[in-house]
Amino acid sequence: MRPLLVWLQHLLILLPAVATLYVVNIPTAANYVGYILLALLCVRITELAPRFAYLLVPIELIGFGWLSNTYGGLLYFLLFSGIISIFLYFSRLVEIAAMMILSVAVLLVVTVGISTETAWTSILIWIACTFLLTANYANNRNRVKLERLVENLSDSQDHLEQERARAMEYARQVEDYAQVQERGRIATELHDDLGHRLIRVKMMTEAALHLMEHNPEQAVRMVEQVRGQLEESMNNMRYTVRKLQPVETPNVRRYALHRLIEDAARDLQIDVSFELTGKPFPLYPSIEFVLYRNAQEAITNAVRHGGASAVEIGLDFASDKVIMNITNNGKLPKDVSYGMGLKGMQERLTVIGGQLRVSLERGFVISTIVPNHQMSQRAEGE
Image 1 (tube, helix red, strand yellow):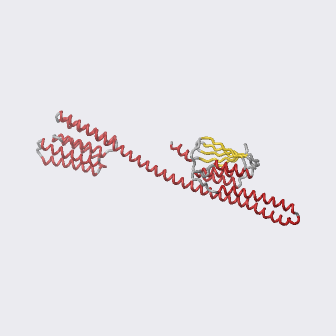
Image 2 (spheres, helix red, strand yellow):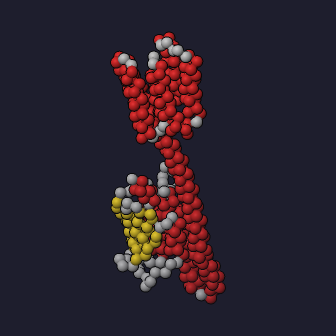
Image 3 (cartoon, one colour):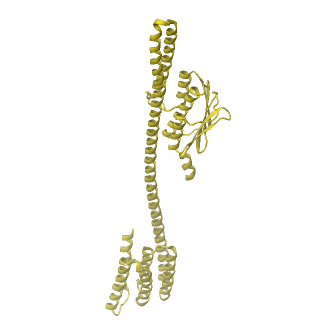
Protein backbone atom coordinates (compact mmCIF):
# COMPACT_ATOMS: atom_id res chain seq x y z
CA MET A 1 0.00 0.00 0.00
CA ARG A 2 2.85 2.41 0.77
CA PRO A 3 4.34 2.37 -2.79
CA LEU A 4 0.88 3.08 -4.22
CA LEU A 5 0.50 6.12 -1.96
CA VAL A 6 3.93 7.41 -3.02
CA TRP A 7 2.96 7.17 -6.69
CA LEU A 8 -0.39 8.85 -5.98
CA GLN A 9 1.46 11.61 -4.15
CA HIS A 10 3.56 12.37 -7.23
CA LEU A 11 0.56 12.17 -9.55
CA LEU A 12 -1.33 14.70 -7.40
CA ILE A 13 1.47 17.14 -8.20
CA LEU A 14 2.07 16.39 -11.88
CA LEU A 15 -1.51 16.03 -13.14
CA PRO A 16 -2.91 19.24 -11.54
CA ALA A 17 0.23 21.12 -12.67
CA VAL A 18 -0.20 20.00 -16.30
CA ALA A 19 -3.97 20.62 -16.24
CA THR A 20 -3.43 24.15 -14.84
CA LEU A 21 -1.33 25.03 -17.92
CA TYR A 22 -4.46 24.51 -20.07
CA VAL A 23 -6.99 26.31 -17.87
CA VAL A 24 -4.89 29.25 -16.63
CA ASN A 25 -2.73 31.67 -18.57
CA ILE A 26 0.73 31.33 -16.97
CA PRO A 27 2.84 34.45 -17.81
CA THR A 28 6.23 32.95 -16.86
CA ALA A 29 6.09 29.26 -17.69
CA ALA A 30 9.76 28.72 -16.83
CA ASN A 31 9.27 29.85 -13.23
CA TYR A 32 6.11 27.77 -12.98
CA VAL A 33 7.90 24.63 -14.18
CA GLY A 34 10.71 25.32 -11.76
CA TYR A 35 8.31 25.56 -8.84
CA ILE A 36 6.63 22.31 -9.81
CA LEU A 37 10.00 20.56 -10.09
CA LEU A 38 10.95 22.02 -6.70
CA ALA A 39 7.71 20.60 -5.23
CA LEU A 40 8.54 17.16 -6.66
CA LEU A 41 12.08 17.44 -5.28
CA CYS A 42 10.77 18.29 -1.83
CA VAL A 43 8.47 15.24 -1.88
CA ARG A 44 11.36 13.07 -3.06
CA ILE A 45 13.69 14.33 -0.33
CA THR A 46 11.02 13.58 2.30
CA GLU A 47 10.76 10.06 0.92
CA LEU A 48 14.53 9.52 1.05
CA ALA A 49 15.03 11.21 4.43
CA PRO A 50 11.87 10.59 6.49
CA ARG A 51 13.66 11.63 9.70
CA PHE A 52 13.39 15.24 8.44
CA ALA A 53 9.61 14.93 7.91
CA TYR A 54 8.96 17.25 10.89
CA LEU A 55 10.54 20.05 8.84
CA LEU A 56 9.80 19.03 5.24
CA VAL A 57 6.07 18.20 5.51
CA PRO A 58 5.10 21.67 6.89
CA ILE A 59 7.23 23.20 4.10
CA GLU A 60 5.32 21.08 1.56
CA LEU A 61 1.91 22.16 2.88
CA ILE A 62 2.81 25.85 3.02
CA GLY A 63 4.57 25.72 -0.38
CA PHE A 64 1.64 23.95 -2.03
CA GLY A 65 -0.74 26.54 -0.60
CA TRP A 66 1.43 29.38 -1.94
CA LEU A 67 1.52 27.79 -5.43
CA SER A 68 -2.27 27.41 -5.40
CA ASN A 69 -2.76 31.06 -4.38
CA THR A 70 -0.21 32.30 -6.88
CA TYR A 71 -1.25 30.38 -10.00
CA GLY A 72 -4.78 29.13 -9.18
CA GLY A 73 -6.26 26.55 -11.48
CA LEU A 74 -6.24 23.02 -10.14
CA LEU A 75 -3.14 23.44 -7.97
CA TYR A 76 -5.20 23.12 -4.77
CA PHE A 77 -4.91 19.36 -5.44
CA LEU A 78 -1.25 19.68 -4.33
CA LEU A 79 -2.52 20.00 -0.76
CA PHE A 80 -3.84 16.45 -0.97
CA SER A 81 -0.32 15.30 -1.86
CA GLY A 82 0.81 16.94 1.37
CA ILE A 83 -1.91 15.12 3.32
CA ILE A 84 -0.57 11.82 1.99
CA SER A 85 2.87 12.81 3.31
CA ILE A 86 1.36 13.31 6.76
CA PHE A 87 0.05 9.74 6.93
CA LEU A 88 3.17 8.30 5.31
CA TYR A 89 5.81 9.78 7.61
CA PHE A 90 4.04 10.32 10.95
CA SER A 91 2.88 7.55 13.28
CA ARG A 92 1.80 9.26 16.47
CA LEU A 93 -1.77 10.53 16.60
CA VAL A 94 -0.71 13.87 18.13
CA GLU A 95 1.69 14.54 15.27
CA ILE A 96 -0.89 13.58 12.64
CA ALA A 97 -3.52 15.79 14.27
CA ALA A 98 -1.14 18.79 14.36
CA MET A 99 -0.24 18.38 10.69
CA MET A 100 -3.90 17.97 9.69
CA ILE A 101 -4.76 21.20 11.49
CA LEU A 102 -2.02 22.92 9.48
CA SER A 103 -3.42 21.44 6.24
CA VAL A 104 -6.92 22.69 7.12
CA ALA A 105 -5.56 26.17 7.77
CA VAL A 106 -3.73 26.20 4.43
CA LEU A 107 -6.82 24.86 2.64
CA LEU A 108 -9.01 27.62 4.13
CA VAL A 109 -6.51 30.27 3.02
CA VAL A 110 -6.45 28.79 -0.49
CA THR A 111 -10.26 28.68 -0.82
CA VAL A 112 -10.62 32.40 -0.01
CA GLY A 113 -9.75 33.55 -3.50
CA ILE A 114 -11.56 30.87 -5.53
CA SER A 115 -15.23 30.33 -6.44
CA THR A 116 -17.69 28.85 -3.95
CA GLU A 117 -18.22 25.71 -6.03
CA THR A 118 -14.47 25.07 -6.26
CA ALA A 119 -14.02 25.78 -2.53
CA TRP A 120 -16.73 23.29 -1.52
CA THR A 121 -15.34 20.75 -3.97
CA SER A 122 -11.86 21.06 -2.46
CA ILE A 123 -13.25 20.76 1.08
CA LEU A 124 -15.25 17.63 0.20
CA ILE A 125 -12.22 16.09 -1.48
CA TRP A 126 -10.14 16.94 1.61
CA ILE A 127 -12.72 15.18 3.83
CA ALA A 128 -12.84 12.11 1.57
CA CYS A 129 -9.06 11.96 1.32
CA THR A 130 -8.68 12.31 5.09
CA PHE A 131 -11.28 9.59 5.71
CA LEU A 132 -9.58 7.13 3.34
CA LEU A 133 -6.10 7.83 4.70
CA THR A 134 -7.34 7.53 8.29
CA ALA A 135 -8.94 4.16 7.50
CA ASN A 136 -5.69 3.01 5.88
CA TYR A 137 -3.74 4.25 8.90
CA ALA A 138 -6.01 2.34 11.30
CA ASN A 139 -5.76 -0.78 9.15
CA ASN A 140 -1.96 -0.59 9.18
CA ARG A 141 -1.91 -0.18 12.97
CA ASN A 142 -4.17 -3.18 13.39
CA ARG A 143 -2.00 -5.19 11.03
CA VAL A 144 1.13 -4.27 13.00
CA LYS A 145 -0.59 -5.23 16.27
CA LEU A 146 -1.71 -8.51 14.75
CA GLU A 147 1.80 -9.26 13.49
CA ARG A 148 3.23 -8.54 16.94
CA LEU A 149 0.58 -10.72 18.53
CA VAL A 150 1.37 -13.56 16.14
CA GLU A 151 5.07 -13.12 16.84
CA ASN A 152 4.46 -13.18 20.60
CA LEU A 153 2.28 -16.27 20.26
CA SER A 154 4.98 -17.94 18.19
CA ASP A 155 7.59 -17.09 20.81
CA SER A 156 5.27 -18.38 23.55
CA GLN A 157 4.69 -21.59 21.63
CA ASP A 158 8.42 -22.09 21.19
CA HIS A 159 8.92 -21.41 24.89
CA LEU A 160 6.19 -23.90 25.80
CA GLU A 161 7.72 -26.52 23.51
CA GLN A 162 11.10 -25.99 25.16
CA GLU A 163 9.53 -26.21 28.62
CA ARG A 164 7.65 -29.34 27.59
CA ALA A 165 10.84 -30.92 26.26
CA ARG A 166 12.66 -30.04 29.49
CA ALA A 167 9.78 -31.41 31.57
CA MET A 168 9.77 -34.66 29.61
CA GLU A 169 13.54 -34.96 29.98
CA TYR A 170 13.24 -34.20 33.68
CA ALA A 171 10.52 -36.83 34.09
CA ARG A 172 12.66 -39.36 32.23
CA GLN A 173 15.64 -38.61 34.46
CA VAL A 174 13.49 -38.89 37.56
CA GLU A 175 12.15 -42.26 36.46
CA ASP A 176 15.63 -43.50 35.56
CA TYR A 177 16.95 -42.32 38.91
CA ALA A 178 14.06 -43.87 40.80
CA GLN A 179 14.48 -47.14 38.94
CA VAL A 180 18.18 -47.22 39.73
CA GLN A 181 17.40 -46.57 43.39
CA GLU A 182 14.74 -49.27 43.36
CA ARG A 183 17.07 -51.79 41.76
CA GLY A 184 19.66 -51.00 44.42
CA ARG A 185 17.09 -51.47 47.16
CA ILE A 186 15.93 -54.80 45.73
CA ALA A 187 19.53 -55.96 45.32
CA THR A 188 20.24 -55.06 48.95
CA GLU A 189 17.05 -56.76 50.07
CA LEU A 190 17.87 -59.95 48.19
CA HIS A 191 21.39 -59.94 49.57
CA ASP A 192 20.38 -59.28 53.17
CA ASP A 193 17.25 -61.46 53.26
CA LEU A 194 17.70 -64.28 50.79
CA GLY A 195 21.45 -64.48 51.26
CA HIS A 196 21.11 -64.68 55.01
CA ARG A 197 18.42 -67.36 54.75
CA LEU A 198 20.51 -69.46 52.34
CA ILE A 199 23.54 -69.29 54.62
CA ARG A 200 21.40 -70.32 57.58
CA VAL A 201 19.85 -73.17 55.54
CA LYS A 202 23.31 -74.36 54.56
CA MET A 203 24.49 -74.40 58.17
CA MET A 204 21.30 -76.13 59.36
CA THR A 205 21.67 -78.75 56.63
CA GLU A 206 25.23 -79.50 57.64
CA ALA A 207 24.15 -79.78 61.28
CA ALA A 208 21.33 -82.15 60.30
CA LEU A 209 23.81 -84.37 58.46
CA HIS A 210 25.98 -84.61 61.56
CA LEU A 211 22.97 -85.42 63.76
CA MET A 212 21.51 -87.98 61.38
CA GLU A 213 23.36 -90.95 62.99
CA HIS A 214 23.36 -89.89 66.65
CA ASN A 215 20.00 -88.05 67.00
CA PRO A 216 17.69 -88.77 64.04
CA GLU A 217 14.67 -87.08 65.62
CA GLN A 218 16.47 -83.76 66.07
CA ALA A 219 17.88 -84.08 62.57
CA VAL A 220 14.36 -84.54 61.15
CA ARG A 221 13.10 -81.47 63.05
CA MET A 222 16.02 -79.47 61.69
CA VAL A 223 15.27 -80.62 58.14
CA GLU A 224 11.65 -79.53 58.61
CA GLN A 225 12.91 -76.12 59.70
CA VAL A 226 15.07 -75.99 56.58
CA ARG A 227 12.02 -76.77 54.48
CA GLY A 228 10.10 -73.92 56.11
CA GLN A 229 12.96 -71.51 55.52
CA LEU A 230 13.16 -72.54 51.86
CA GLU A 231 9.41 -72.17 51.38
CA GLU A 232 9.45 -68.68 52.87
CA SER A 233 12.44 -67.72 50.72
CA MET A 234 10.68 -69.01 47.60
CA ASN A 235 7.58 -66.93 48.41
CA ASN A 236 9.68 -63.79 48.88
CA MET A 237 11.52 -64.50 45.63
CA ARG A 238 8.25 -64.93 43.71
CA TYR A 239 6.92 -61.67 45.14
CA THR A 240 10.08 -59.76 44.18
CA VAL A 241 10.22 -61.23 40.67
CA ARG A 242 6.54 -60.45 40.09
CA LYS A 243 7.16 -56.79 40.93
CA LEU A 244 10.03 -56.64 38.47
CA GLN A 245 8.00 -58.03 35.57
CA PRO A 246 6.80 -55.41 33.03
CA VAL A 247 3.13 -54.89 32.29
CA GLU A 248 2.17 -56.88 29.21
CA THR A 249 -1.01 -54.98 28.34
CA PRO A 250 -0.10 -51.63 26.73
CA ASN A 251 -3.31 -49.92 27.87
CA VAL A 252 -2.78 -50.74 31.55
CA ARG A 253 -1.07 -48.02 33.55
CA ARG A 254 2.32 -49.23 34.70
CA TYR A 255 2.22 -47.92 38.26
CA ALA A 256 -1.49 -48.26 39.12
CA LEU A 257 -2.22 -48.37 42.85
CA HIS A 258 -5.16 -50.74 42.44
CA ARG A 259 -2.79 -53.42 41.05
CA LEU A 260 -0.47 -52.88 43.98
CA ILE A 261 -3.36 -53.27 46.42
CA GLU A 262 -4.54 -56.48 44.75
CA ASP A 263 -1.04 -57.97 44.63
CA ALA A 264 -0.26 -57.02 48.22
CA ALA A 265 -3.52 -58.46 49.54
CA ARG A 266 -2.95 -61.71 47.63
CA ASP A 267 0.76 -62.21 48.21
CA LEU A 268 1.13 -60.87 51.75
CA GLN A 269 -2.24 -62.14 53.02
CA ILE A 270 -3.26 -58.81 54.55
CA ASP A 271 -6.29 -56.53 54.30
CA VAL A 272 -5.60 -53.44 52.15
CA SER A 273 -8.22 -50.69 51.85
CA PHE A 274 -8.14 -47.66 49.60
CA GLU A 275 -9.89 -44.25 49.86
CA LEU A 276 -9.78 -41.47 47.27
CA THR A 277 -10.66 -37.86 48.15
CA GLY A 278 -10.58 -34.63 46.17
CA LYS A 279 -10.91 -34.17 42.43
CA PRO A 280 -8.40 -36.39 40.58
CA PHE A 281 -6.31 -34.88 37.80
CA PRO A 282 -3.60 -36.30 35.49
CA LEU A 283 -0.12 -36.67 36.98
CA TYR A 284 3.31 -36.83 35.43
CA PRO A 285 4.57 -40.43 35.00
CA SER A 286 7.43 -39.64 37.38
CA ILE A 287 4.96 -38.63 40.13
CA GLU A 288 2.91 -41.78 39.56
CA PHE A 289 6.09 -43.81 39.85
CA VAL A 290 7.07 -42.17 43.16
CA LEU A 291 3.58 -42.71 44.64
CA TYR A 292 3.56 -46.33 43.52
CA ARG A 293 7.03 -47.14 44.87
CA ASN A 294 6.44 -45.37 48.17
CA ALA A 295 3.16 -47.21 48.66
CA GLN A 296 4.87 -50.49 47.83
CA GLU A 297 7.69 -49.77 50.28
CA ALA A 298 5.29 -48.68 53.05
CA ILE A 299 3.18 -51.85 52.71
CA THR A 300 6.24 -54.10 52.69
CA ASN A 301 7.73 -52.41 55.76
CA ALA A 302 4.38 -52.57 57.59
CA VAL A 303 4.28 -56.35 57.20
CA ARG A 304 7.97 -57.06 57.64
CA HIS A 305 8.85 -54.78 60.55
CA GLY A 306 5.50 -54.04 62.17
CA GLY A 307 3.73 -57.35 61.66
CA ALA A 308 0.68 -55.51 60.33
CA SER A 309 -2.39 -57.39 59.18
CA ALA A 310 -4.27 -54.40 57.74
CA VAL A 311 -3.13 -51.37 55.75
CA GLU A 312 -5.18 -48.30 54.81
CA ILE A 313 -4.18 -46.16 51.81
CA GLY A 314 -5.64 -42.66 51.48
CA LEU A 315 -5.01 -40.59 48.36
CA ASP A 316 -6.05 -36.92 48.54
CA PHE A 317 -5.96 -34.65 45.47
CA ALA A 318 -5.62 -31.04 46.68
CA SER A 319 -5.48 -27.98 44.42
CA ASP A 320 -1.68 -27.79 44.35
CA LYS A 321 -0.46 -31.11 45.77
CA VAL A 322 -1.19 -34.80 46.16
CA ILE A 323 -1.06 -36.41 49.61
CA MET A 324 -0.87 -40.18 50.09
CA ASN A 325 -1.32 -41.41 53.69
CA ILE A 326 -0.57 -45.07 54.45
CA THR A 327 -1.64 -46.34 57.89
CA ASN A 328 -1.05 -49.83 59.30
CA ASN A 329 -2.12 -51.62 62.47
CA GLY A 330 1.31 -53.06 63.24
CA LYS A 331 3.24 -52.56 66.44
CA LEU A 332 4.50 -49.04 67.03
CA PRO A 333 8.22 -48.40 67.49
CA LYS A 334 9.47 -46.21 70.31
CA ASP A 335 10.96 -43.79 67.81
CA VAL A 336 11.21 -43.49 64.05
CA SER A 337 14.55 -44.50 62.58
CA TYR A 338 15.15 -43.88 58.91
CA GLY A 339 16.38 -47.16 57.59
CA MET A 340 16.99 -48.12 53.99
CA GLY A 341 13.26 -48.19 53.16
CA LEU A 342 12.38 -44.74 54.51
CA LYS A 343 15.58 -43.27 53.12
CA GLY A 344 14.73 -44.61 49.68
CA MET A 345 11.26 -43.08 49.91
CA GLN A 346 12.73 -39.73 50.99
CA GLU A 347 15.30 -39.76 48.17
CA ARG A 348 12.62 -40.36 45.56
CA LEU A 349 10.59 -37.44 46.89
CA THR A 350 13.60 -35.13 47.10
CA VAL A 351 14.14 -35.43 43.35
CA ILE A 352 10.63 -34.10 42.58
CA GLY A 353 10.47 -31.59 45.44
CA GLY A 354 8.19 -33.68 47.68
CA GLN A 355 8.14 -34.39 51.42
CA LEU A 356 7.95 -37.51 53.57
CA ARG A 357 6.31 -37.41 57.01
CA VAL A 358 6.02 -40.16 59.60
CA SER A 359 3.50 -39.96 62.45
CA LEU A 360 2.84 -42.25 65.43
CA GLU A 361 -0.21 -40.45 66.82
CA ARG A 362 -2.92 -42.51 65.11
CA GLY A 363 -1.02 -45.65 64.33
CA PHE A 364 2.04 -45.81 62.13
CA VAL A 365 1.27 -43.32 59.32
CA ILE A 366 3.59 -42.54 56.41
CA SER A 367 2.58 -39.47 54.40
CA THR A 368 3.90 -38.84 50.90
CA ILE A 369 3.35 -35.21 49.85
CA VAL A 370 3.97 -34.39 46.19
CA PRO A 371 3.56 -30.85 44.76
CA ASN A 372 1.60 -30.59 41.53
CA HIS A 373 3.46 -28.08 39.35
CA GLN A 374 0.89 -28.40 36.52
CA MET A 375 -1.94 -26.93 38.60
CA SER A 376 0.32 -24.27 40.11
CA GLN A 377 1.47 -23.00 36.70
CA ARG A 378 -2.13 -23.02 35.44
CA ALA A 379 -3.27 -20.98 38.45
CA GLU A 380 -0.48 -18.45 37.90
CA GLY A 381 -1.43 -18.16 34.22
CA GLU A 382 -5.07 -17.42 35.12
